[in-house]
Image (cartoon, rainbow over all chains, first blue to last red; front, side, top):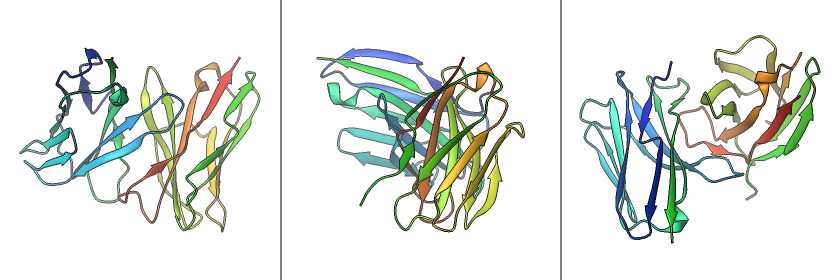
Length: 111
Length: 113
């Protein structure tokens, strides 16, 4: 049973387009993280959000944590081929507990 | 500063064998976590070690075990390998407990034939 759902599962877009991927759960999380994983590598942490309604920006990436702390979104503006990878969200229910990962969204940005 | 290193990077075993994977965390990091990543189940938490003690454990059978040494290096062992154990095994280290930023290694790709 996936406690975290991510959509879409796959996304293929042209360079320069904007996109949004989603991470949803029926559970409340104390914190939520987004990672990007490239082929042959481990996931790399992009951001951690802890406050409901929080918005964080990392260059062309905008992360939002839902008000109820059950969902999150990642918006990429003007996608580039270097954004290609598997985007994973991970949530922790309580402080000190292990993070649960979603199945990921596989993004392909075509030049 | 060197990142998390995992050895070996690739491994092929047959059913029934056992395997030991190694993880060297970033210098100064004391917490090490292990994950299994498969296309069907995604990334699943195996266990976490801190100060040579297992702090958290995921929902995996007892065939999966691990340990951490005084220098924070960690090993995980899988006994009596099954075909379903084929996966990418990832190690992540952090300064202290898991709520800190985790840095993942490149993983060990295990294939069980």
